[in-house]
Length: 346
Image (tube, rainbow, N blue to C red; front, side):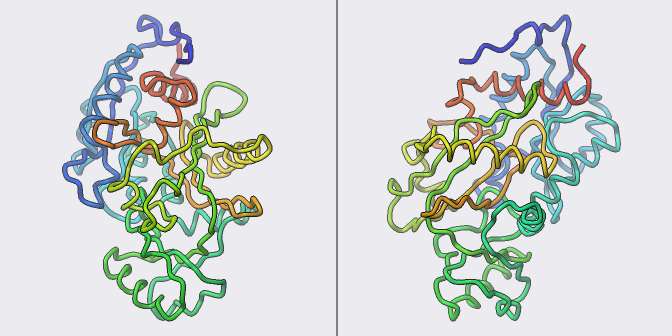
């Protein structure tokens, strides 16, 4: 494991009251898949305490404002996905900024933009980041906007963790679009992203900010679709993540040549810089046969699950471990990154 500077975490010099703020997963419903289970909460708690800090837990519910004012933390380790609304990931950062409490992770505007796939893609496309062609569709009548070639893939525009995505979201013929689009609008009560489906390799990239000239890009992960059943059809959705989850489906570090590795790393750092995302993020790409790298989406609140016994494994800590960090060290680095930004280090 990487050798972190333990002096930084000497409790006599660098002690803080750190509050872990999140939504606890209470069931296995599709919506709560983004929430953190008890196992993950315990692992983050262990990481905070191993860094020499006092640990506090605060549920990110309707009582959060009163709870955080009473707790008076020095720093919040924000993991809150939010309860409802199109900007739900921004609710906790907004309250923390109003109260002047420092926190780990992206700010109000960045979390709001990044939860909206369409806005994120428009913003990055303006800055010449390649992304598949797309339209945002709120009604079936808007389907005639699509002027790029099939197949296309449909995704809820304001969800993360592959919510609402499976192999049957890929539409190969225009005549089949209305039925699937209508069903998704009815079920998810939000606009749907209709995106050009890029056939090819899929990569996930973790970025870890730190005290230094630039963020660290963790070991790049490739999803090995050859290890999945044919029914997955090259779509890393809920079925692939839950029914067929397993570390043998992923190649990390990805087997890619040096120039491609540099390209992915450079693009990932640029995206985090453009979207003003500090501390940590996970970015997903597709690459076609000509090695054109297409940005798919970014998660400024990447999953932190790592429970191999129950096949509950998030890419971000897995990539960190493949980069030489223990789970505790990863938590310590994230705290260090945020504390440095806010000038909390003594």
